[in-house]
Image 1 (cartoon, one colour):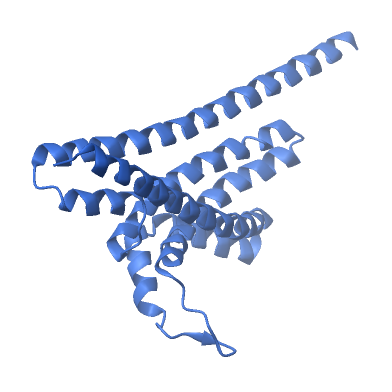
Image 2 (image 1 turned 180 degrees about the horizontal axis):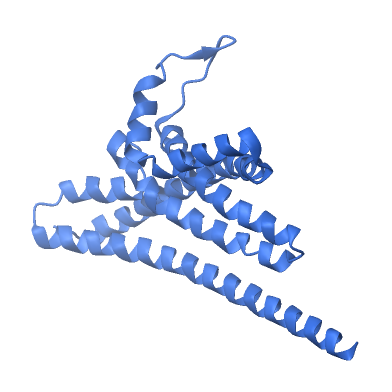
Length: 219
């Protein structure tokens, strides 16, 4: 039975697990920003490099996270070393690396558009990249739950582990509802922040256009 004592112990574990989800998303996004920016520049440059970048972005966009995760898990030796130091990534790092293809493709697509806006003389248009990257981060947070499949103690894994210990279906449903509430509130707050950023940037862009039109009329 889900008692008050069990509930009090479950919440800190759930919050700690959710923090792991955010850590995985942050690592994946950091790598994705670096790789995506490079691919965006290559694609806009055209030529052979642009074609290679476009093909790479397409492949990364279509790469299933689970497939990439288990590929990395099995292809990287458990005792890999570099200059005598162990370099085998942890399970959490493998999950983060499996999300890099999506993150890099997303950054490349939106980064290329931002660069086009800059070249067209619209820095505010380019700043729309910021809410898009914020949205990508929260999508990565949700996708990081794939780590439960390989033993990463993230939020979903905590919920599933606790649910196994509860014999009654009603208690399991209450537990799942708590998990949905915590993840749902957090993610909805994040997406609300994205909408706020987009609205403010949109209003600033409209204000700049109006000012520009007014100056032209004066002239």
